[in-house]
Image (cartoon, rainbow, N blue to C red):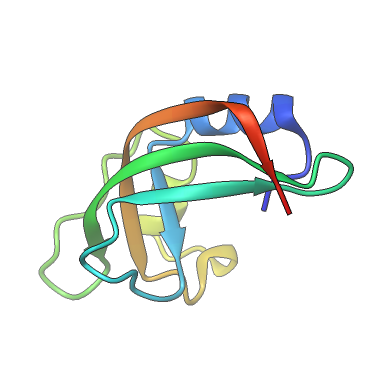
Length: 99
């Protein structure tokens, strides 16, 4: 969930991966982002690649994008976030889907 629509657009534009604590089913190809109140709606959709992990022998994420270095170095803020999904594209929905 993301609180501010401007922040969401800026955040998603700078971030190349989305890290998660659990593995998303292999059939899932998109992540839908929900904006908190006052918007309270689904506003962004990201196409994703299969997950990268931090298992021994796995290749690290490229260091440039926001959060990748911390993910690779297992920074304390990233404890438990063992699955990183590369964001291939970001779409802003024209018509918000309210809950």
